[in-house]
Length: 637
Image (cartoon, rainbow, N blue to C red):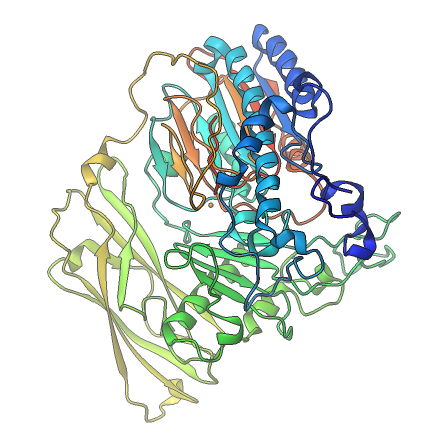
C-alpha cells in the first residue's frame, strides 16, 4: 500500500500495472548516491567524459526514467518540498465535466484529496530536482566543449498530477501533452530567443541532422526547427504553425509481429490486441485553439475543443454536449482544425497509406482520412472560411529572405451541407494590395465535407510602418445543389481584411547567425522552487518555443546534447540557450521516447562519419531524455 494509505489492489480500482508500480509513493530508503537517477546520470557522465576526449564527433542519448512512478526521491531532494508541501499548487479541478475522459476519483477518492495531492506533488518536484542535479553535472563535464555542443532538453510526455482527477499521461490535456523543449548552442543560437510557433517532437530528428550539416540524410516526417529559431519561417508549402498528436496504443497480440499493410500479403492477419477505444485519437493545436477528435466517423463519443487563452485549465469544452448549440464561430474553428488534420494525414500518408488504407486499422472504419472527413459530431454549417469569425486573416511572423520580407498564410474554405460551392472570383483590393498575391485562380468548386485552401502571400523589400496595411481579399461565390450548372443562384461576396501580426521587420532583417560570443561559464544548476499559485512556465535566459506533432544555426555543431523533459517547465541551461515548449506527441504505444530516438538515429543514418569535427562546428550529439515532465511547472536547467 502507498504512504497515502490507499491500498494498491485491483478491487480498489487499480489496474494490474498500477498495482505493481504506478501508484507507489514514498521516500527512497538509501541515499541519493543509490537512486535510479544517479545511476543513469553517473553512467552518462562517464560516457561523456570518454567521448569529449576523443577526436571523433559523438552522439550520446541519456534517458532518465524519473520523475516516474514509483515516486520515491531521496531525502536530500525531498525534505524541502515535503516540509513546504502545503504551499504547493493544486489542480484547478479534480473533476471532469463535458469530457471524453474518465477520472479516477470516483473509484479512488484519494485523487480528490488536496493534502494527498500535495504530498504527491512534493515527491514529484523532488524527483525533478534530482534530475536537475544530474544534468548540471553533465553540463559541467562538457566544459569548453559546450561551445561545440548542441544541447537539447525535452520530455516524452507530461504528468496529470491530479488535474481533472487524473494521473500519469494518456490524455490530450495540457498537463499530459505539453512538454518543455530547450536548445542550446553557444555562439550559434541567440540567447533569450522565444519561439512562439507550436512545435512537435516529430521535428527533433530533422533538427539534429540540420545542426549536424547532415540534412541530406533526413527522411523523417518532421521539419527542422531551425527556421523558427532563426526567425525565417515562411509557411510556403503548408501551415507550419500547427501541431498534431495521436493516441493509439493498440498492438499485435503477444507472439505476433506487425502485419505489413499490403493487400496482396499472405501474412496471417492476426489483428490487434484491442479495438479503437473511446478516448480522443487526434489532437490539433492552432494558436490558442485546441481540438481533440475521435477516430471513427460513427463514434458517439464526444469531441473536445478548448480556447486556451480564455480557458487555460481546460474546464469548458466548447463541443461535447455543446456541439449542436455552439456558435458558428466555434464551429468554424473546429472545421478549420479538422481540415488542418486532414492535410497533415495526407502529407504523412506515405507509400504504406497509413492514414488512408483501412488495413491500418484492421478493418475498423474506412481509413483515418475518410473517417475524419466524414465525422460530424457538431452542428453542420454552410460555406465557411477560417476567417469567418472576424473576417480578418492575420499574416504571421515575416521572414527576411535576403532581398525581401516574406510571409504566407493559408485561407481554408469548406461546407458541411449538401451543396456545391463555386468560387467564381478572387481579387485583392486596397492601397496595399500590391504587397499581396494568391496562388489559386477561379473557378474553384467543392462539395460537402471538402476542405479547400488558398495561399495568401505577402512580399515587400521594405519595412512597413506601424500603420495597418490597407488590403483585403474578396471572394465571390455561389451555393446551391447545382450551382456550377447555371442554376439561378445569387452570388455572395465575402471580404476578408488582411492584417500583419507585427511590424518589427528590422529585427527580422538582422537575422542569423548571431555574432560569436565567449563561451559561457557553466555553473551548477539552480534548484526548483515551489509554486504557490497556478502553475506557470518560468524559463530563465534562453529561447522558448511553444508545441507535438511536428532550430538550428548555419554550419555543423561539434557536440549535441538532447534532453527530453517530463512533466514540468524548464529554462535554458546558459545564456546561449534556446527553449521551446512543444505540444508533445502523447505516447501512442507503450515505450520510451529514448527507444524512438535510438531507433531513429540508427535508421536515419546519423553516423560519426557524417559529422565533420571542425572548429566552431558540432562535434557530437548528447541526447538527454526525462520522462513525465510537463511544461506547466517551474523547472530550471
